[in-house]
Length: 209
Length: 209
DNA sequence: ACATGAGTTAAACGTTCGTTTTAATCGAAC
DNA sequence: GTTCGATTAAAACGAACGTTTAACTCATGT
Image 1 (spheres, rainbow over the protein chains, first blue to last red):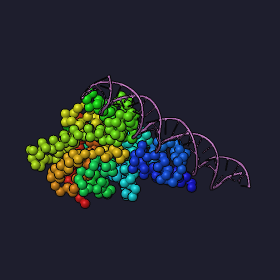
Image 2 (image 1 turned 90 degrees about the vertical axis):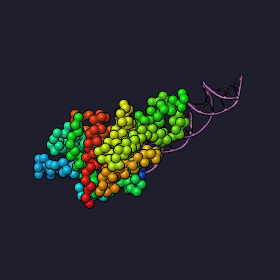
Image 3 (image 1 turned 120 degrees about the vertical axis):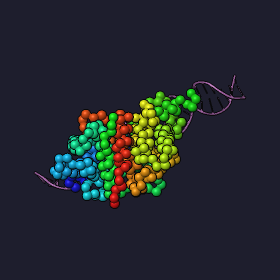
Image 4 (image 1 turned 30 degrees about the horizontal axis):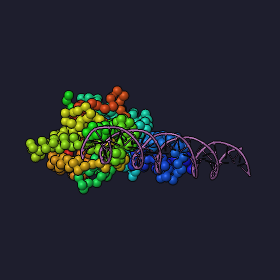
């Protein structure tokens, strides 16, 4: 196949296994087995396991980043100072389901992002491109305008909070406190819950020192 | 030494290394080297690496759990229906610094909790005792009374959000969007920021379906 | 004095890991 | 039809892993 079919099959398998078991918990052999490829194919197509992870992370992150950026563009085209609620939705929404319309693989991709970003392995955090930083800075500036009087550091803390809350739905970060509760809530509902939760949180008055 | 000095030295070393590099990223040899103990001492004192992790997790979690429980007791002694803000502080406060007064090792311990709870390895999540579940359920009930009209599942989502936000300050869950920003904010300040952030979030009106 | 047993030590076990090497295979261009 | 670069296949490499074994130390109790 043109552009090597096994290459994308390896990417697919790695994406799934990294999401489920983390970087260190996934062996190259498990990836190639799931992909139906040979063990050495990883070394050939990507060079090393760490570079494979970087490729997976970039492939997963890119559509999210462009969705976040496009969402901010649309808001700024209407008004130079978008309200907090719309900023939250434009920033956190794509994190929930990869694509604004919500494709089926969204749950796994965001689960992967969380797993990668919180992975203790160094290799898991050295893949970032310049685009991710740029969109983060643009939202930071927009939130700063929407929340005057909030200290930059506290704003930074709150933006990290957005990522944390969107993440926690995917990771079982706590054993279910109540017996009769599903481990993870379904995408669309959780997305709404997160937006109300985060809009209220972001709109909170600054903490007095 | 009585009760085997090396046993606690191994626990200390494991606590630090698990917090820094995760479960799979920490080898038994690295633990015993840092502890100045023999490799086989882990097998002798704990049985296996997984049981060592469980011992570490229990030792770290216990004071937090009792602080959460005592905080809730104190609130309930005053009124049967504590307000949301005080519930948030009593629940999230101990997560920030292990002890209410804030001892020096607090930052590392909470970092460890996050690392353990989000670790993709199965062994890292099968250590929980009955106490942790109990205090979670008690807070769940208290929040349910303080937030009438909120669906149980959405309440559960929000409680997970509390844990996520308290966690994110420790884990570098996102590359710093702005250049001139410290990776992690200091304990006491972040604790206040988190409480205002979370109080506002928890107090948000229920999401309409 | 000596047996006991918990604690420690050094060495090795078998397995799994990421990576590399070497040869075989395929498809198109000449 | 042959040649050549690109891709896949099979096998092996050395290193690191968790765990186990067997010998040793040494205070204690008799």
